[in-house]
Length: 84
Image (tube, rainbow, N blue to C red):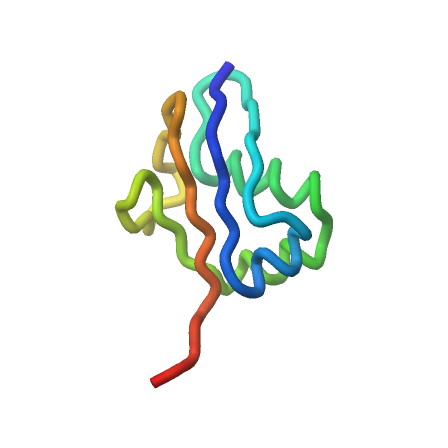
């Protein structure tokens, strides 16, 4: 069992309804498995937001959703930001 923390920012936080949460996944989960678990928990609204998000796994940008997630990891969910 792998326990990790997910932190949501901006629109992802609004869609999830929480600023952060702990997840437990069995086996050897990947970022894709974590995203699937998040969508199952929070529904299609979050799924639509996740499609436009970028992710940091333990502070490092994740481009490959097949990246393994280890115990105690932290996944940050970052929607596109506007500003200047």
